[in-house]
Image (cartoon, rainbow over all chains, first blue to last red; front, side, top):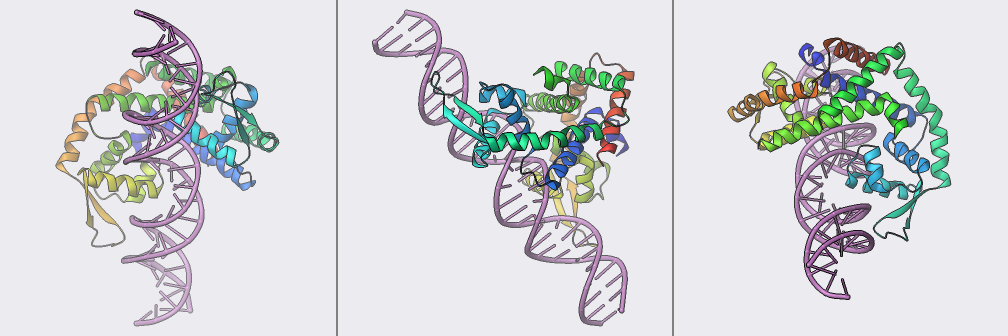
Length: 142
Length: 142
DNA sequence: TAACAATATTTGATATATCAAATAAAATAG
DNA sequence: CTATTTTATTTGATATATCAAATATTGTTA
């Protein structure tokens, strides 16, 4: 236990999992039917309407296959629609529905609040160093 | 993209995923048939022979159900055996096989090397602050 | 233009994550 | 000691992760 706690990668994993569970629980408790990843993906589409699935995959750091399936579910949930892309028929145009926009809007405050709670007591300086450390790890592993 | 990069949780997630892929690729490239989680679980059993699955789940930060299934696979791979626990028949005694011990031994150097590569150029001070930040996040989300 | 290579997405197979419910055994209250 | 509660694990259902292979389309080259 103590050994594990000294390993930075263990703490990274624990932190993101704890945060994810915390965020999901609060979203669920408010009766929103959406996951944090679905939320992120819809945000990506809203911010960049011409985005492809491949670009989404890079953005949210997921496999193309995962993105295909997550979007499939979001189409079923009526948050997103697919339309044929005229200029490249391998791709499809993703559009966020009214329903999708609404849930993003609604969940937005909650997400901001979640982040604030999770970062309570952490200084900007500490955040900067943490970010820079994480970015170094990312660079080192590429 | 730039926005996302400013969100600490995005970087935490990206860092651990990048590291995991990096580590798994190196393990696979060396023809070891084991995942990093299986490795961690076997280590847990070796370091604490009386450990229960529930304790393992806490250690490696997984669901009980996931641990059940991961151990099932490790039994199939002949890395671990289950025996009935005489004093409490709900539990089973987990034992690491010779084969399991061998692969842990073999992969160990690789794991240490992976960590070293991933942390190159990061000072002890930076690591300490990062660890403490992550621990604060973990505490805030509980 | 026909053959080939490259690209975007999907599908299949398998592993893992998550929650809820089921099972089985142990602990405890009455 | 029996009934009830608690605990440890398993199972079911569904979502996601991952790699490889399949599909479909586009781009390129001879």
